[in-house]
Amino acid sequence: MAEQILDAFWEGPFEWTEREPYLKPEHVLYALYGAHHVYGRDVLLYIGRTAKGAARRLTTHTGWVEEEYDVMNVRVASVGEISSWAGWDDNERYPKAPENLVAAAEALLIYAHQPAYNRAGKESLPAAKGFRLFNTGMIGTLLPEISYRYHDDEWGA
Image (cartoon, rainbow, N blue to C red; front, side, top):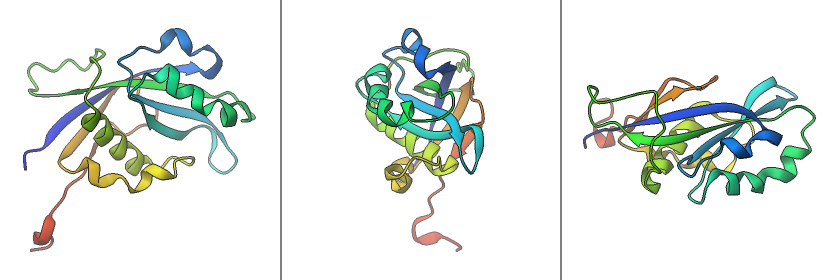
């Protein structure tokens, strides 16, 4: 199976209360940063994806975000497929990506970073089989490259 290489171009951080003007339809991933009683301040708390726009999806988190005792920040990303290194520009927003690419990117991000508030997505790694993800732009504490290697029955052979 040929590996598909993705780029998540991150923008932000934006304060939770001032995020609206920065959210664009092509933003399909988001990361929430805030304070955690064990991990400290300004840590990655949650990673999510959206098919209907970041502005709409982020409002579903309003209840718990407003109960947080410190400033919450948001980073948003567009996702694109890299078909050639020569034509790759790691400094631009991508058009809205197909759902399968977004699901793979989210699965890799959640699995690699294990955000404190993500529960459901930690078992979604099979969606990332055959993908490699680069994080570019304003990545904050995200890893610059994440991949999932799959070896079927030949593991260790």
